[in-house]
Image (cartoon, rainbow, N blue to C red; front, side):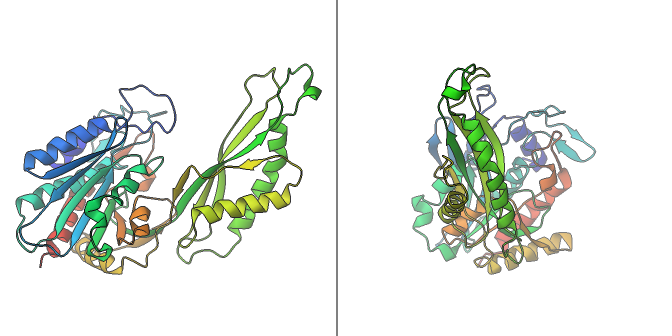
Length: 388
């Protein structure tokens, strides 16, 4: 199947990650994409494996096992989920093609990369022969919210039984056909303040949790500034902290007994999520004596991607990129990806794919079809170049 048609089919299949929200059942979760991709791989004769992670949410892995005993495994990984469609000004599932672009939710992030990988996989499968590396493609869940899909992959027996150095991983994200070999990680937790509720006509009888949070927040902002002033990574810059949501109270005529803020902390290579949470908790405790607050354990923890494990992979993939495009750029990015979980398992991993991150999650998300085709060709050449 042509890579453009494959992407159009994928975009037409809603796979929204609800991220804790209540959304229509016909739009959420990855099961429709999983079913489609399973048929795609089985129709070519590939061995597949489905693993249930949560209800309606399964990882799918396809294997290309060449004759002989391959010394290397190359893993293609792409997530099946997308962000929600709020505010979109195009048909999110229409897969409209216009002026060399394909439009729709996930077209750029990251069904475009998935289509390029799967199309390359199909062509390599037809050409498989002794001496080629084993090729594995993992279609994972939950990258946009909790990274649960990739964390299951790194614990599968088929990958844990291998020497990590014998596995190279390419993770699909919109990188403009550049290689990303370093990026920040993320850890997220809740900052909570409690109070005592009562009727708002007698507020003196209660303790207002929102007022308590208001006393704490200036110190949170001070901590964010303190963090950004610390010495940073030579390529990624400083660590950062941001507060993204706040919630509290039940009604306007009730003094609230609870208020919570969600905190997002971006990690640098070498930092651990637990240490980042602990440092924030201790720092805030020293600044806010007497103000009742609680810092929860993290509900998301994704490490940063360091570049120390992947120089040989960068060189091999980079040669194929340069041969097709005439140019090679290796970047470090502030966002996080599934590649970090592979790196944490000591598997050399880089991020690569068609499209630009500036088009991801947008109201009119699109991808250039020409980049889809170039990514497919580059990935094909990369795997074939590793044949003995």
